[in-house]
Image (cartoon, rainbow, N blue to C red; front, side, top):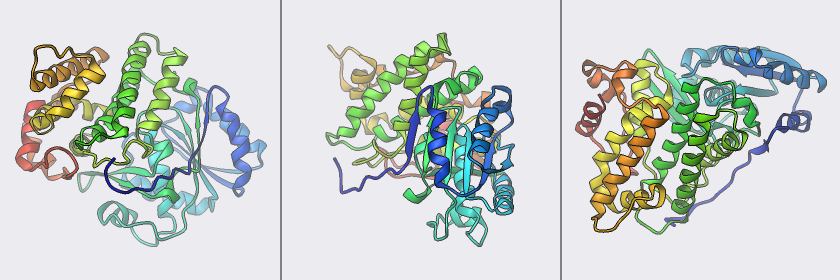
Length: 388
């Protein structure tokens, strides 16, 4: 394990088929005014909205609504949410939806009392929160981001062609999250497999860093094996409770800060993927899948031993008579085959990217330095070219 660290996660989870009953336990802890945040209205079609409203009314809450949160929430929408929260004098923001809704709720929570432009303060200058934060609770309806148990918030600014995440501290983590795997059954297949790959990418971004014998790596290998196994079942039977519950639980632990401890972490796949999304508004998980294999082939020579370990411990690659490079390359081929079987987007053309957009995407890509190779513009361009 590398370095010194402190671990804390203040989010309380209610998990399982009866998890929504946990709202009755949580709501009395907060004031009367609840801002209910959700997306395009699917929760009204599948009945989750009615269930939540009933519980809020039974607990005597004044309900205010902020709907229409898009898959890549924008700075314009954030400003709208700030005004809605102020008008409601919100004591609690309850996010009902997937990761984008949870991300958005956290961004609103830290911005209402900020006293200045939230985008500039948190997503350009990356300042810490220095104001009162409105508590957030989440009712999860799609898995992938892990936003239900972390301080992350990703916002897109279309004018500036930037999609940026800010990882806030413990005080911004959701106070509680409701995780009922059955709530994820009705999401479209495209969104389901996108979320599954987002989970995998979160794990790999943390796994492919460091050369020490790190307990976190062993945990991540187990999470990856379980994810692959459960995903194979879920794509054949989307209502298999065991598979969907495993995927939901893996998604939470993939990005609730646990497996990052003692790691340097990478995150360049996310930086490139988010830059693509800033220019195309493409689905997050698919931007990651489209660039992952080209990215990992680019950095493989700098982290060959870890890629070989990944091939053996996650993909069961046979090592006999092979070099580490051969083992590592076979592992990536196994991963590529599985991704295609899952139905993921494997090139950026499908996301609307053309070669003429490369310069702008490169300009929008933030460079991270925790992985096996610190990228420059030429590296980013090479990945985009390989992914086209």
